[in-house]
Image (tube, rainbow, N blue to C red; front, side, top):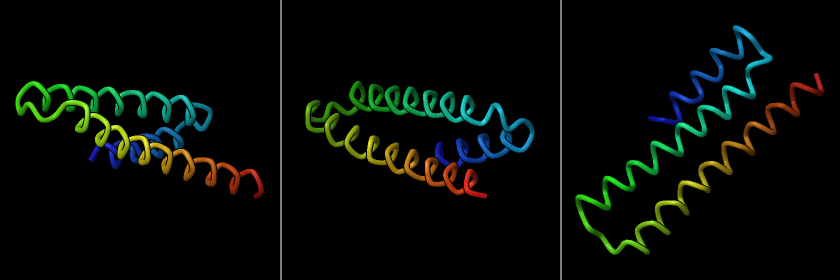
Length: 83
């Protein structure tokens, strides 16, 4: 859900003012990682799983998602530069 909101927001701002595209992407990614950290903290406080394993799995998957988004962004920007 957060990824959809991020993509929608970045595309919306990019259509209005393309010079703010990068700043919007970075701000949305920062908000997304903070929201993920607060979710993990809330989950750790309420459920009490094995902390180390849960955090390692949570951020492993999260950082793979971020790497995929950045790769997609770089491909998109390269394709626009070639045009």
